[in-house]
Amino acid sequence: MATEGNIVFTDDNGVARHLTTSGLDSAPTLSPDGRRVAFVRRVPDRTVDTALGSECADQIWVIGADASGARRLVEGWDHMDPKRALAGLRSPSFSPDGRSIYFLSTAWATSQAVHVVSLDDGREHFVTDGNTLEVVYAGKYKGTLVVNKHKYWLGGGSYDWFWLVSPTGREIGAVGPEDGSVKTFKSLFEK
Image (cartoon, rainbow, N blue to C red; front, side, top):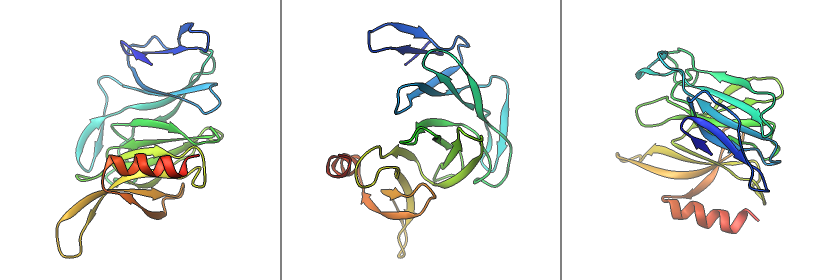
């Protein structure tokens, strides 16, 4: 959990350990094997120029649950292409094998961008557009993503539905229009 901008890990015995002390950290997520924690670090007084204007130059970090091996994986950077700019980073989520971390970045006026970074080699790339992100950790669709996407009807107007997306960004199918659709999907397929 994050407390006063610091990441705190509580082990199975209920012992709490401060993993960070910067006062700038948030959004911790535990790896599937319970050995690492990914989190967002705010970078004060630094912004990134994007197609939407200036955004926070956040970073994605990973650290061992024993407070060892802290390293920055991704740092915000300027770019006018929404698929390449990294700003306002949030929602880090490990892949089921724990070798990659997906996250959201500010992108378009109607949608964020889903990116992934490899823990093995540090390579980062755009996956798809989306406003929310959930990794499927078990079952038939293990390793896929449930992403809320903003789309347009052919006859005009727009809608926001949840879609099942492959790790490469290919849409597999519609999950549904509301949060309840995601819960139903997970109860049926994440077993």
